[in-house]
Image 1 (cartoon, rainbow, N blue to C red):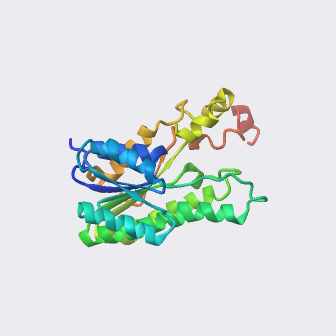
Image 2: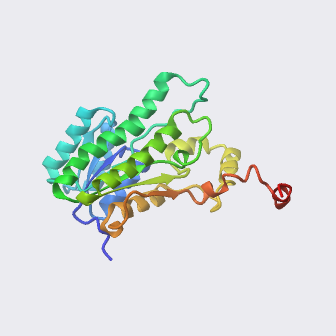
Image 3: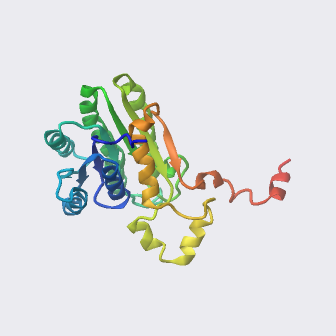
Amino acid sequence: MESGLANKVAIVTGAASGIGRTVALTLAKEGAKIAVADINEHGGSEIAQQINHGKDNAIVCKLDVSNRGSVEEAVQKTVRTFGKVDVLVNCAGIYKPWEFLDIVEKAWDAVIETNLKGTFLCSVISGKEMIKQRSGAIVNIASIGGVLPLVNAGAYGPSKAGVISLTQQLAVEWAKYNVRVNSISPGTTNTPLNAIEFRDREVYERHVSGIPLGRIAEPEEIANVIAFLSSDLASYITGQNLIVDGGAILRAFETQWTSVESLKKMH
């Protein structure tokens, strides 16, 4: 069975590192042409070079997702180069941990501007190109922190909850144009940033103990889900938020009810 991504053109934001990097490489492997879009133009160039191998299957776009002009320029460059936009994957995002009593407005604004406004701008500006051709797929990266509270994470959880709501609204409004919009909510993933924290084995073990599958995700496992939702294989899926967390969210109440005896005392 074909992947459903052959000859598609995909813009991947945040593609210079982390999950975005793996997504760009995975979609390229499945036959898509890639606009590697990131504020880190040097890092984006390295990923584009990996994809190209002497061919013209990738371009790099310096992109500030919170700036409309920057987003318009990246989309226009993609259309000029490849003639269309079939897929958008909104991977760009930032995380700034704060307790709400102490959070500074600047930190709140930075997270909302990147995670929520950035997803909005990229979706709307890319979506206009998809609407012209009456086809397209958008996949937004949310988080399990957008489904359940992520304590001491500042604006991160609210921003990702907004991404999920935005996904659903766009899916309903754009279905008539055959533009599908979905989101995924990853659990903890083995990115370079998390790898630094998990050098402490005790921290790692404590974290993994809350995941039924007993491990954190590899970036490829997240990218494979995104590739599916981006492809024609998912042609009847829209407006969904797919949780990809190894079952972690199902254990949300375990800290409150630790045994059968605890539950029996309630009745």
